[in-house]
Length: 118
Image (cartoon, rainbow, N blue to C red; front, side, top):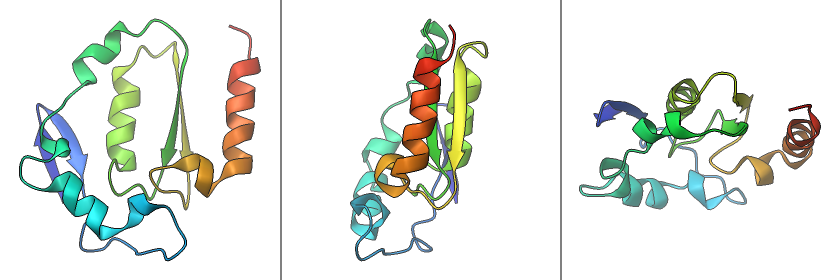
């Protein structure tokens, strides 16, 4: 399911969300229900119009299984940033917090991003 908030597509899959016993809290239904409830945060903010003002290199680490900010929405954010400044990296089998889900590969991407010539 997706909703459009201030022109930004937000995708949610509350019913199909996996409960991961030892996984990040962000994958659990209670967190999703709180975030997407009527008058919840998912309906009240939109930072996308200001993203064009960013003037420094920006790395986006996107978890493909993120139930709060799905990968399609993250791609929209990356597309709203100045193209010469953004690097968007997608991580399979990762939720909202990429670092705990894929620490080695996320760290390698961050290290490469920091060390690349500017």
